[in-house]
Each structure stands twice: as structure tokens, then as C-alpha cells.
Image (cartoon, rainbow, N blue to C red; front, side, top):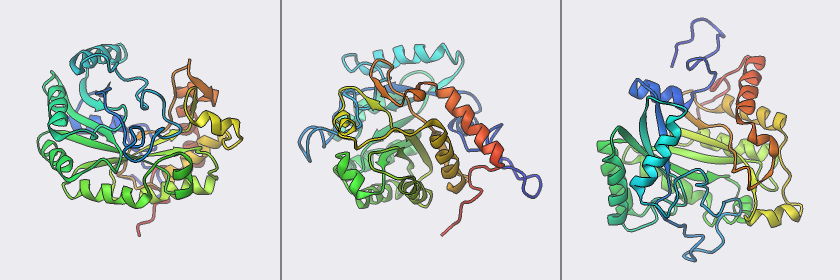
Length: 318
């Protein structure tokens, strides 16, 4: 992170007014590093009947791993195929194995260990990022993650989505906010980096509610955040909620403003892994402007510059 050169000068991370994932990785490794998205064949406890069925109402049939490898392929095949696809954008880079689809700690420890280790053995892999739910962190799994954290660069990406219990029930999240705090605490006892996922635009949520979720994350003991735009995909349970009038898409200018508001209240050291989201074009119902990812990101940059603001400008420690 750069030092502020003079009073009221913007805090910059490279040429950005927020602490980007790319900036963080270049500081950590001294070169380009990208994620290789994987589908290890897991499911979730709110899909298989352990807690409930149906999954989160926004989640696609591929467990939000629509850009990951195909689960019909073994992990090494997936890794190589996705890696080569990414290399078209970044020819020279190292890799983080990203266990993305479904809940990637929801299996016996011996299975998890084998899957994680086989990716760590691939050439030029410098770490792992493991996406999961806070109710999928039994003690033996946390111990395994603690072992990994001692020998490689590790993030656990933990889905929160919202702090509001009424919304969690509406989207069939099937755990409460207290469970999330407990999951964070389990991981942080071992110094494991945690990235919180939240979604702006969930059914029934006001702008104030979205900002309350961002404010809560700002004061959690988490080291990263992903802010997703709610996008509606065909064949998800949320389609029925949309048809029932429970969901109204955010407009692009509204979303850009909300992101700038959120960045202002996040601590400057928190790594911003993502600021928007998109879905497969053949499945996307809306908002259609989400397909223009770079236009959205450029609009966020412009909003921050126009306001003369940056990540952490309004952050207040408690």
C-alpha cells in the first residue's frame, strides 16, 4: 500500500483507489498470479437434504461454478484446461487452485486432503483458495486447513451474502449470521485468511440493508471481500421469486454508487477480490448490463475519482 503523500491525497493501490486482488497478489508474489477454477464434485448441506433441499435460490445448477472445469473430468484435467484458457489473457503467470463450485469443505477429511494435495502438486501452483459455507467447518476439516495454511498460501472464501435473517430465509441460505461469525472465528484461530462473499441486490433488500451487510464485514476479522451483483440465471429457484415480484434488478448507476459507498467504509488493508459478477450469457435473465464487466469496473473507478474518495476514507474503527 502506498503512503499518503500529502494531506487529503487519495490512497492508491497501483493506479486504483481500492485494494485490488491483483495488486495484493503482485505484492505477495512479485508477478502475475491467477485463479484456476475447479469443480471437485461436491454438493451442499442445503441441497442434499442434510439441512434442507433446493440450495440457495440464486445458485446455478453448477453451484456457482459456471466458469469452472467440468466435474465429469478429473481435477488435473480440469486444472490444465482452465489454466490454458486463462493463459490466453495472461501468458506468463503462476496459479492459485480455486475450489469454486458448491461447498468445498463438505466431504470427509481424507477426500479433501487428496483433492487439495493433487492441485498443490501441479507445476507453478503457489496456493489454494477454497470456497465453502460456515456450517461446513467441522473441527477435523479446520485442522486440515490449518495444516495447509502452514505450508502454502491459503484463502478460505466464506459465503455470507447478507447479515439479514429475513433475506437469508428467503434465499434458503439455511444458516444464520451467528453461524457465520463462528466459522470466521474457527478459521482465524489458526491465522487462516478469510474472504467474505456478499451480494448486492438480493430480493427485498433496501440500499440501507446492503450497506449494513458491508458495514458488518468491514468490522469482522476477515482479510478479504467479494461483492457480487445479484444476477438472475435461468433454472434457478429465484426465477419464481422474480416472477412473483419479489426481485427488482439494480440499475448500473445505482450499483456503482453502492460499491463506492461500500469501499469507503471498508478498512484499507482489506483485499477486494471482486466488485461485480456475471453469469453465462445463455443463462442470464438480468440485469443485462452486468455482461459489460469492464464498463462496470471503469464506472466504479470514475465514481471514486469524481467523488475524490477511496477505500477506507470513511472507515471508522470500533
